[in-house]
Length: 330
Image (tube, rainbow, N blue to C red; front, side):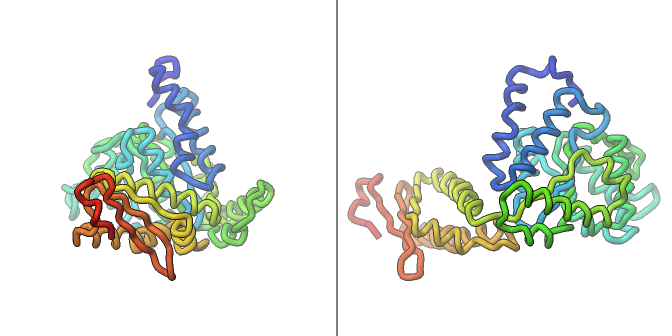
């Protein structure tokens, strides 16, 4: 924010020093990525960065579903108290040269002039935000001139001639470049293997992007592929979210170890990371619970025990918290 560290409120300093811990709770199995992001933000907020440039700029490299977007969301929630303080720009929509002007808006006299730029308008409305540029390797090289200007000057001039300030934003760019190298190292957790894999990925990336662009970025972060153990931890986070939604109706769920193990196994795919896990929870838990709620088989105040028996999930409803439903166990 450009505020000297001595002028930051004591509470804000304490909060900032806990950034790493906060991100670790949400982003599993990516210690190097979390530490790199936390360190860069602490450097920026302690007054050691150029005040006109963005708070931080990162390239996140890694395969699908390993936590790149989740880390961006967690950072938005921590820094701006709202995970919706994230502007997502899909760079695969800017593959053509003529499409790049949509980022900053058409000049006067051209179609779409009144609409403003998709990027500049979003930042004008929400100047404190994490900006996620997804799959940057797919964008036309003219788009990188826009990114360079943001990283260098911390501002853009839109099609209507207005200056849009980026100094209170965090820039995160994601790419799948080097994903094959990362998957080859899947399952190896020692630092030597990580460093070797990181070097292979960075070499591949240098073939794709111009050095003057890479040199402007604060940190290039390489994500691991997730292990089965990571998936079990992510499962607990996802289950907590489901529990908190059900808690509004005073419904609690309890999974037996067998149910948890099967769910983690069904949701594990080294190629797609944690995404199949989310789908497995929707299919195996959320949909059956939703059906039972609509049918009146699960009621407000119930406790539901979920088990894995005979190759299927079973749901036992215990209405102990509602004395009038004691005999209605399903």
